Image (tube, rainbow, N blue to C red; front, side):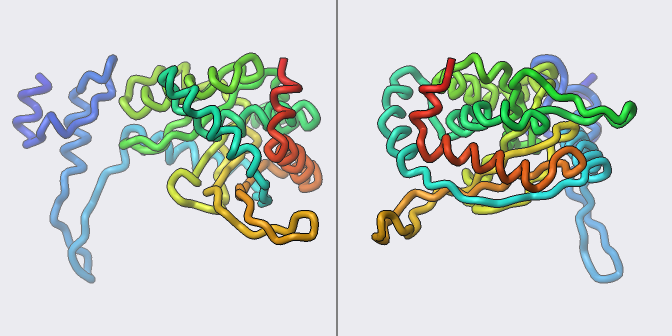
Length: 279
């Protein structure tokens, strides 16, 4: 049925992304792709192209609208001198490669946030709109924004507090691959308590990340650059990480959010503390 429908609608199945079990192409996938095929149309100013919003993109749009409609979001920005973290990661990434693991900075960011959260527990949770209750989560399940051909997905790394840097790096890598290949399970996209987005991967510096509804906060990181800083009375070149932190102002105020980011920065600037304080 799928092949005959594709032939009828003039759709090349090689260009269709399957949303069925195991990535299987469904009739809805074929119809949706048919709707997205470029059509010549015109408005009163000239040629236009009409593309239907469907599938993952439609789900993403729905979640973003819910976030904007229900949260009083505010973004604060800061910087961290991550020179020591840069050196640490460079030393250890070869060890990770030997194990087939791509060691990025994200596991370190996640561990720094995990250690800082207990002092600011309100940021690790969600708001129940129906009951008007703040749900403070006692677990550390961190969502990670992943860019895929079908749009942004947010796989969730469970029990961050019980995993090592290497274990987090391996899980982030596997979840990212599953998301991009459309093999991710629904359960792996649920249960986050706070979310991370690393737009620095694409060259971004600062941003105003949108909260991953129904989370209360999202931690964003930009591109690490060499910048001049004054250290011990001398101008030196340091590795600087831009940070953007968006939070729901209904739950936390600016002082709390700024203090939280300041605490995270202390861990990032002295990464040894992450290991010393880990269970």
